[in-house]
Image 1 (cartoon, rainbow, N blue to C red):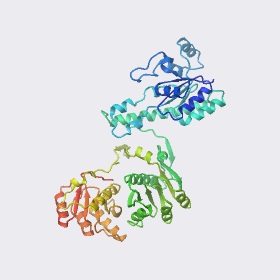
Image 2: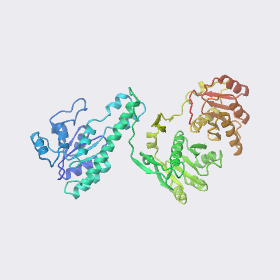
Image 3: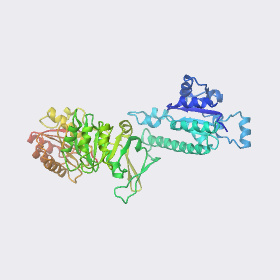
Image 4: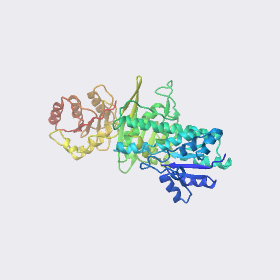
Amino acid sequence: MAIQRALLSVSDKSGLTEFAQGLHDQGVELLSTGGTSKALREAGLPVIDVSEHTGAPELFEGRVKTLHPVVHGGLLYKRDDELHLKQAADNNIPPIDLVVVNLYPFEETVAKEGVKLEEAIENIDIGGPSMLRSAAKNYKSVTVVTDPADYSRVLSEMKENEGDTSFKLREELSVKVFLRTSTYDTAITNYLSQAGEGTRAQYTASLPLERELRYGDNPHQATTLYGNFGDIFSQLQGKELSYTNILDIEAASDLITDFKRPTVGILKHTNPCGVGQHDDDLREAWQRAFETDTQAPFGGVIVVNRPLTEGLARIISTIFTDVIIAPGFEPEARAILQKKKNLRLIKLNVDAWEGVRKDPVIRSAPGGLMIMGRDHTTLGLDNLESKVVTKRPPSEDEMRAMRFGWKVVKHVKSNAIVYSGADRTLGIGAGQMSRVDSSRIAVWKANEANLSLKGSVMASDAMLPFADGLDAAIAAGATACIQPGGSIRDEEVIAAADAAGIAMIFTGNRHFRH
């Protein structure tokens, strides 16, 4: 039976007027509410307000608009059941054959910095999910659309089927609705469990299958990816991604988006092994990163925060690299890198990444999950001048190097030590059982690379528990140190710095990465 009447009530109005015009052209009566009704009228379309259709006004600042028997009865009654048909006629409930609803933007609202609980609550949609569920339950007779991407499919089928849609499409759209309402309710549950007066009593996740990954840590470990990874990272070429590739891509993107200046990072096993900056030439930034450790880039990950240039592509094409990540690639760079068929090129959607960068970190635990707030902001860099704990304050150059090194060390597995200048890393020590070992390894790596640490700055992701790590830095030629402080031996460490005449800052914040 041809669709006679449609109810449209959407927050996302992309494609709305074109779709509504298509419905009108096929003789469909349009019902609507609030802003959707206004948009349709401004487009010159005839529309009936839901309040006129039901005979009941919108109430409570729009909290009650479509919660009415005439709406839900028109969606739910069975078109082939005599009792239902009689009750619909007796109660003056006309059919609603098509529902178009996308929900209040709850997820987008709570993702905003500093959102208040009251604002989040007002963005919990009630009428929308109710209509979606009613229509989806009666998909035998009712078409329900919650994704603007499906508008063209609905119009196409209506043209091919004398104003109706196929049962197959209605069934598919119904499943899509229940997936959407499930994820929507999950987002609300998780937010309220973590915010306001929430109890943290339960955490729920409902994610669509993204893809089967090539393998896990090892080829015998099957791995599956769920969620919307593909909305954030687009693979332009190369072998299928594995579990370790995903971890590397996340770590590289987290690192590079901490820097505003043109920056190149090189990572291996999620650890930065070289970071460099240059305002005018990515090749110079690359050289500064590469010189930190010329062996580590073999089979590693390269990430840049500017479109990858032809000049840089020519340089890195001579090195065996597993993954290259950039917000864009010059056509000439693509042409050069396409010759390396297995090389994975990943385009980073920076806006989408910034939207998820603050999402909590979720890790498996025996019998369940752990949920942790993400370490998405580099803390401790405000008012550095007031955080000097030594007799000698740092010079301007040392201060710049401190800021740079502190941002890098945040992304190195702890125990982490980074020696740096103002725009490049010089030595990195990661993941050792003692902090002094990390310091010594960083010095050794710098020596291996023939890089002098004279005049460098040492950054430590956590407090220096003893003076021995600082002593290694002093012996190597470092002239300044930035660290959180907080050790019971802080006075001993400060005294060692003063005796050597080096400057030291306590940030008061730790950036430990396990």
